[in-house]
Image 1: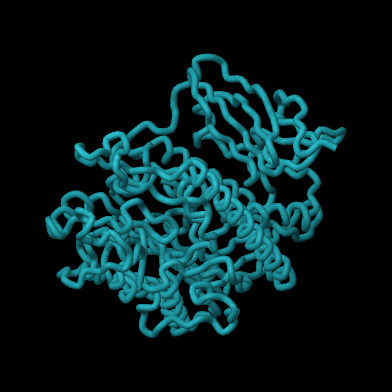
Image 2: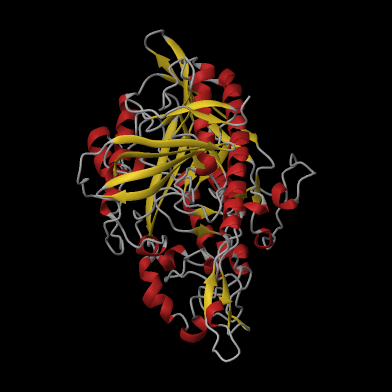
Length: 609
């Protein structure tokens, strides 16, 4: 959909467009190309055409703005190892690989194995653009790749949030604007950009602390009906509110800590690349659309995709309430990680499918397979001496390393002067996980979520190698043919509010107060439908600010601040009431302000002098 717009306006077709996701687990859904994710990936079922239209229009406008801002530039590639902030979450599955995985020589010996076996590389392309007013090159932004799941927030989180990746992105952008370009306007929308993409994060988690993972509901006897002469009735008993609050708080602290540390590493790498800038970078690319079901036998895949029972148990980041569940409390059915079934025949051998003990693979074929994705768009990009392979899935560390080696070997055999290869996952679609054959047989969460069987990683490795050997040469990129994709989207449903408010929207601040280190405010900020993602541009200014109550009125927080939460409290006749919570308050006096609108009375926080 985006390429259909950008091809007409900017000459950027589907073969030259890469839409990459950070994979925050605190983002919206309802726009996927497969019914399974729209109907089962959220507590709210359905595909919303308005959500798709909104994202399409906004991404297309971003491409258009970028093309309109094309200027002479200088660029530099570089990388650095960042240790201690990521770990392998499925270490037993990784250890199935042959040969066994080995840590890099520079891995700190003091770290546990799961921290030493990650791919720690933060790879970055720095871009400086020519300033026509001064004739000098100024730092403009960066594109970087790092392997880490977007699961810093607690599983019980109920807020839309960019997770750790958002902090890293914003921190580098602010560093470029304020520290390098010395901009004094401190605008809400950064002038600089940081495109922070995900790498081989399939089995990689951020180093969240154990106390940040909330307990899941457990089956318990319904207390009101528990007695000597009653039949036991069961219920899902949720964790206490105090426990959920504590784990969410621990998770937010970890998100900020890890995000700021990675942001510091990104800023340091960006600064270091300032001395290696060049005005020459050769571009090349190759692109293909794979029909996974129709060409399964040729590609070496299973013809029918399937989800394993271990996937229903959840990953180590957030095990589901079904983890370890047993039939009648005694008989295991595979609802746990690392529980392969050696008796499963056929292409998906080792994988326990949904209720296959009762129905074989019939239930999967009838109820599941048709709702899963059946196409994959794959690209290899050459940017200078780097190759980038893009895949529509979550590639594990070892699978990604093997793919990079294949890409480099194919490119060098052709004589291309390339020094390194990167894998960028979660691009141009979502195919769940891509594991090695050895990891697949272990049937941890990632193997259970490898849809087309144990041959997936090898197939994608061959495809990337073939593309690496056939990339176009020079800076001119000839067009490629892209097959038409017909997708099953699931149940259409109006999820984003569409109806206007029944009275004129207004902005008011009803009350504001402090409790400990948290400032609260109750406010009304216009119509409900104006808040979710709409067809408009990203907000060019903050919706709400916290300012110091002094002559300068310095802004200390706004709604782009990770320490500031906005929670919907009520809806009435199309209008929204919100509660603001800012956890960055220290001793002092503040006001809550709506730009070009009202501001609150003075709020005193912290112990009084």
